[in-house]
Length: 134
Image (cartoon, rainbow, N blue to C red; front, side):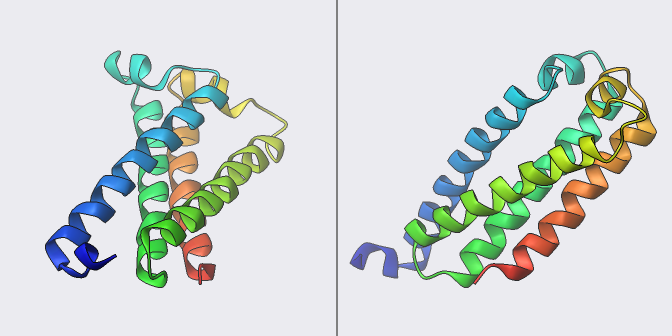
């Protein structure tokens, strides 16, 4: 597309696509967690804020790598979606690997250690996913 050759238009288009992807991916994350992210954050639940912040960072980091390594918005969104699916799988693996407690329940109860660990896992895994995006 010729109009995307303008760097200002291209940046705005990638920004708009990324913003939409973040909103959609966060909504999906909200559906799979047992707590309501924004209600808990409003109540001051720092663990939920850390876990949600990690998800936002992770999603944005994957989108960043997707933009960097692809030549169009379509491919960027495809890779971002694939990366998000891997990130959500990592979320379920984290839950599975901690059978001694329920991650969602601990985060909802404001267990900051679990919230911090959740945040670090989202951020760390997003770098691994991003590094593999071509």
